[in-house]
Amino acid sequence: MPGTASPSVSCRAVGGLGSMALSGLEVEKQVPADPRPGHKLQSWWSLAFCLCFYGFMSQMRPGESFITPYLLGPDKNFTQKQVTNEITPVLSYSYLAVLVPVFLLTDYLRYKPVLLLQGLSYVSVWLLLLFGSSVLHMQFMEFFFSITMAARIAYSSYIFSLVPPACYQRMAGYSRASVLLGVFASSVLGQLLVTVGGTPFSTLNYISLVFLAFSLVLTLFLKRPKRSLFFNRGAPACAGASPSELDPMNLGQVQPTGGKPGQLPASWRDSALAHMLRELGHTARLPQLRLWSLWWVFNSAGYYLIVYYVHILWNVVNPTTDTTRVYNGGADAASTLLGAITSFAAGFVRIRWALWAKLIIAVVTVLQAGLIFLMYKTSNIWLCYSAFVLFRGSHQLLVPIATFQIASSLSQELRALVFGVNTFLATVLKTIITLVVSDKRGLGLPVRSQRPSRPP
Image (cartoon, rainbow, N blue to C red):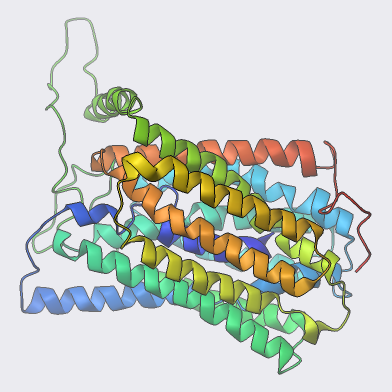
């Protein structure tokens, strides 16, 4: 559900999930010179402020934590079976369908058009939430939400395409903080409006729509980069333009311009892709790369399935009709805050990962399994909230570590490719599980299959 996806993906986008994005941990390996003083430094700070302000405002959706009770309540009056088995599965299917095209368009169009597409999709999501009335409308809502999720790679990559290499690590930290702060502020604001102000869920969605319309307007004022990672890396840079993140990259062997008689010369782009695929085959033999990539695929698939359906579970555990006693926003805020703390703390962990990685992954996975079982069994909403907060925090602890471990042996080009492949495989696995377990065309199980779902 959109109401459950965004906070997690926000943490992912800045903690690893970002999936196909490059994290701040990756750029620690670069040792560029400090930015020049004067006008360029002042311009960099202005750009950093604009990007962070946009990242913050794009997360201000106070109604998001309460979308599931909004759909199940008197405003929309959908049944739990419809939400669980007909509406929510569309998010997994459509995300799988749009992930690769949006990733390629992000690079080909140089980020800004995809950010505009994301803003328009967010507005479409909330318009359908407010004015849609059928299951089909809500399925289209999930489709547009999947576009916003796939388009988050545009922001994660965009922040590195306009600033000089010396600013990469700081820019990653600032953008990470702005997005997490936006998610946290949005969740807290929504919870306060519901609990203290008694604001109806529909009003929260109107407020979210206003914030999203404002962030869409902000997108129009963002600068469009001259270069990107794959398709536009050879574009000439304008005088005085900020160096792109592609400048320090190793381009590999220079491709010949001619070809054999009777054959068309291979394009530079195709040669570069073939070179990267060959390198990917070699690096796939590295034990640490395989270990962390497998963890990424399987843990990410399970993590997002939990995040998609946890709000429906909360409604089953606590089917109250008193909206002021729904604390989904507080749980999302607490889990976001803990995720930020654990992600930050992971950057200071110094151990021999080649020796201890398997044990740590096993311990964290067993802890996550226990927390999921607790959510499955408990009838206490506060225990359910607490288990989810700890579950998200434990996941976010390993995401930046996995990001660094995967990136440590790869070039910039291969990092994007490996993260993209891992994310795609996790999405495929998540989609298969959704089709078999949740979709009405499969088993169509309720969110707590050990007993019938109670009506809202």
